[in-house]
Every structure is written in C-alpha cells, then in structure tokens.
Image (tube, rainbow, N blue to C red; front, side, top):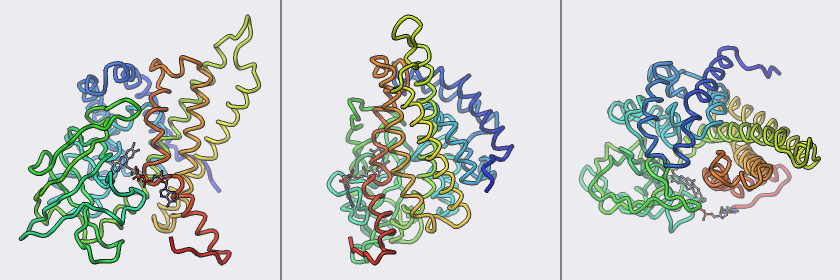
Length: 401
Ligand SMILES: Cc1cc2nc3c(=O)[nH]c(=O)nc-3n(C[C@H](O)[C@H](O)[C@H](O)COP(=O)(O)OP(=O)(O)OC[C@H]3O[C@@H](n4cnc5c(N)ncnc54)[C@H](O)[C@@H]3O)c2cc1C
C-alpha cells in the first residue's frame, strides 16, 4: 500500500497553502468583524488572482478551466483550502456550487451547460440547491411536499423550502420537486433549474444560524415557490430521477466536505498547540506542561490522522469503483469526520479560554457554523443506521425501515 501523495499534487497543495496564508487569511478578520458582503470586492480580486495562477475551480476537468484532478487528489487540495474559511469560495469550489457544477457536467444538456455550467465554472455567477423543506423531514428526501405539475410544455412549481444555502444573490437554484406522485417513492421527484430572480419565487429570509442571519454566499435561506413557471427543458436528467441524482451528487460532495473539515481540524490543532506552548499559567510554566492539554493534543492528532485516511480511502474507492460501491465508506466518513471536527474545534476553544469564544481567532466561527456538519448531507444517526444495518445483514438481521 502506497500512502505517498503524487509530487505534482504536493506542489499544488503547497502553492495553495502559501496563497491562503499570504492573501486570503488576512481577509478573515474583515469577514468576522464586518460581514461577508463587506469583503466581496477584495474576494473578487483574489478570485481573479487564483484564476491567473491557474488554480481556479480545481475540481473541474481541464476543458472547463479546472485541474482535472481525481477525487482523491482533489481531497488533498480541499483539505488545504479548509484551513481558511474563505478558501473554497476564493478557489470557486465551494458548496453548493461545486455539487451543482458536477451535476450539470454529468447530466446537463448542452444548452444547460452553456447557460449555467460555463458561467459557474468561470465564477461569474453563484447557484443554490433547494431540497430540504421545513414541514417534511430532510432525512427522508423521498417524501417531499414541493410539486411541479405539467402545464403545456412548462412545469408549474409550488412549495416551501429552507436551508437553501447561498440563495441570497444566486443566479439560479436547482429545486427538487415531485413530478411523478404515483411512482415508487425513489422515482417521484425531479431536479429542475429555476433562474433567479423569477416570477413565483420568493426569498422569505436568511435564517439566523446561532444568532447570525448571514448574507450573500454565506447564508441559508427560506424560500417559496408559488406557481413558479419554468420550461420542461429546465429539468436535469430524466423525469423522476431527482433522488438518484441527489445521491450521486452527495457521494463526491461528502469527500469535499470531509476533507474541508480535516483542514479546519488541522488549523484548529495548530492554534491549540501555539496557544498551549505560549500561554503561561505561572512564571515559566506554559499551559502545554499540563497533562490534560497534552492528552487533547495527542487525541486530536490521532483522530485527525484516522479521519484523513478513512476519507482518502473512500475517495479512492469512488474513483475506482464508483459511488454506489463506496456507500458504506461514504456514510462512515460522514459521521466520523463530523465528530472529529466537533471535538477538535471544541478542545481548541477550551485551550484558548475566553479568547476562544471571541472572533479574534476563526475558532468561534467554526464552532457556530460547523455544528451543522453533524446534520447536513445526512444526519449522523441516519448514516450510522445505514452502516449498522449493512453490517447486521451479514448476521441475518434485516429491517425494512
Ligand atoms: C448548515 C446547513 C446547510 C444546509 N444546506 C442545505 C442546502 O443547501 N440545500 C438543502 O436542500 N438543504 C440544506 N440543509 C438541510 C439539511 O440537508 C437537512 O437539515 C438534513 O437533511 C436534516 O433534515 P432536517 O433538518 O429536516 O432534520 P430531520 O429529518 O427532521 O431530522 C432531525 C433529527 O432526527 C434524527 N433522525 C432523523 N431520521 C432518523 C433516522 N432514520 N434514524 C435515526 N435518527 C434520525 C437525527 O438526529 C436528525 O438530526 C442544510 C442544513 C444545514 C444545517
């Protein structure tokens, strides 16, 4: 088994890290103190610079301006970018745009690619993905209330969605809506593009998360579709294939998220160690002399290393055998890496004392906004249940739901 990282990936990761330290991390305090919108002009300049350096949209194939990386190689880049909470946005591989790009690339028509994928890849527009509903469990996406009915050659969409990340300022959304109500549950919904703004689409509010309503890309919105009419040609893939496409999209998406979380863990551990080594709890007595702190450092190192190997293995399996074959690994990394993230950020905050809960470091930002990691893309409990049932099946245990 060869654990070495290809030299070209190593040098790319090094370039990414240097760029983040020199150019992007200095902008973190602007976002933390004045909000995302205040930083947009500077973020735009940095995106242009990344393009000139040939590192923009690294997850995409070369013909779309990307770097043509395998999922496992992109994983290393995603980890490096995760060290700064603006990293993925500046390199144009942020969720949910990255997932939407991959979906359109694989299943979009030529016209959809021209109108939506190409400007997304160039970073000229943003997009969002509206699946979760306030009145139905997001954990069961086969049971949606939002419907798209046929009217001539159009769909007319009615429904209520929320946690549509980045809807504020997006140029289109992909909405999951029931088009075939009488089909089996997994074949009822379709994914349909709605240009924004659009008659019948309403952005109700940016939902406050841990006290922060957010703005622009950095937001999660509640949205309404009221007799919202779009042509049938806006559907992505076959009618009724929405759920299957969502599963496919989430396979790569989970690698992106997990490696980003590992990047967050690495920076948090770095901050934890710097603080422990510097902070004196008495004359000539740094905090790092305490065994509890040493325990947190060692546990964090071990957990991060374990999570990284698990995620890279899952990415390797997707690259070689496809998302379906890697179903179990994908579920395992989703809850395991989210748990490591929560624990490592929490320990780093504790080591910083009161400073840890201020916005003078990025730790409190991650504590606020990454608590959701245990909920989005499938709650921990759902993934654990998937894994356990698959294992128990080998012992003759089988349950329907
Ligand atoms: C930060 C963030 C960003 C998001 N962005 C988007 C987005 O861009 N687009 C979008 O469509 N959605 C988005 N979501 C929504 C997300 O996908 C849902 O929150 C998630 O699928 C869970 O659905 P729910 O919130 O309705 O919880 P529910 O389905 O109501 O579940 C609540 C809890 O019940 C438990 N539970 C549920 N089912 C089971 C089960 N089978 N076994 C055991 N326990 C169970 C779990 O503990 C779960 O946390 C986002 C969410 C967050 C937090």
